[in-house]
Amino acid sequence: MAGIPGPFRRAVDKVLNNPLIMRVLRNSGVILSANSLASGLSMVQGIIAARLLGVAAFGMLSPITQFVTNINRLTSFRMGELVVSYVGEFSANQEQENAAAVFKAAALVESLSALLAFLLVMVLAPVGARVFLQDPGMENLIRLYAGILLAHLFSESATGLLQYYNRFKFLGVITVIQSIVTLLIIGTAWVLQGGLAHIVLAYMLGKIVGAVSISVYSLRLAREQWGKGWVHSSILALKPRFGELIRFAVSTNISGTINLLTRDSDTLWLSALSSPLQVGYYKVAKAFMNVLVVPVNPMISTTYRELAREITAKAWNNVRYLLRTGTLIAGGYSVAAGVGMVAFGPWLVRLYGEGFGPAYGVLLVLLAGFMVANTFYWSRTVFLPLGMPEFPTKVGVVMAALEILAMLWLVPRIGAIGLSAALSLYFIGMAAVLIGRLLFELKKREQSGKSTDGA
Image (cartoon, helix red, strand yellow):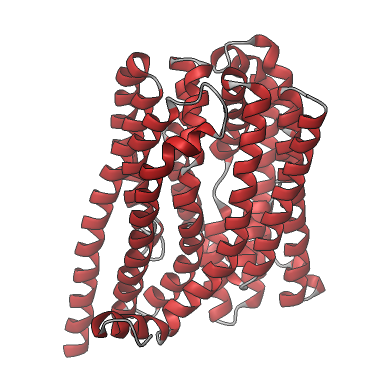
């Protein structure tokens, strides 16, 4: 690092010598390598599918997959975060039976919610096809894709367990394998000149491979950590904490439902209020957001793991350092990647085929919101270990209402660009409010700790 100016060299040295940041970066790096490769494969998948189907048919793909996924999210309690928090707490206190009981309870609740979601999709498929795809004949494809729900019975809980026990390498490998399976099937559809059904099947089988692999490995890991009898651990032993666990799960479910109504239902809103053609433009533009999100996304779970430990220990300086350094790393990358997309976006959009040119304008509007959300990637999860899971939920309710109003007004008038503007405003508004409250909360807790020490 001889050529690096002094201040920058000292900053780099500080990061490299900090064990907290190095754990975050090391674990994130494992997932990043896998996710980067998977993202590249995903882009190739999208290009092949877009060239095979054309703009309008390609625009039907997202509403099909999103309809099924969102019904699952509606019934889901985001058990991965609960597992990381409470398995971590009980393990740190040497309460291994309670740690096993938390995982068991989370897996059971998640399985029941997945089965409920599957039944809802079977019943609501005709409504989804008529409202969001404007084609009643698509209900069978919606039901076909619902097969992923039976494979994802407890995959969120399983992922949380793997994250807590530092099995990020395995998660990365499965991510790549899942993408390879999907690409091979899409490639076969290209050779056979297949249609939309073949592409839906490809995405479904890829998801099934990933979910089943993670779930099976989590059961093996549970046996390694807690012994063969872990499945007999008593959930009733958690009775003194039932209220807290339920509050945590319900808060994350509500938070997920808010996202479901806004960013996770973006193509459903667009398809219902506009047309599959606009969805096609939007889907291509959003695909480029993976260039922003994929390198930073692994830091969400790895930073959360470290934040939970430091907040439990009331090590507020470490908490601030984690947040500040993570923000600088994510923000620096986001700016660099954003400049690249602005410069090369028109050429990259043309890779998807003739007729996708309008996607570049959509890309530019999306970029503003995604860069802010990416930079402050920790803004929601940091409130969970602080014991404030409801606050992001309450903020999200207000912001979601504003976003929906914006979508209802903009999308019928300007299509995909209107949706992109509403989504970007949602991201920026959420980040501003959450960061402001976090700074206030950290200052209050630091001062409270000093007062206690002084007493």
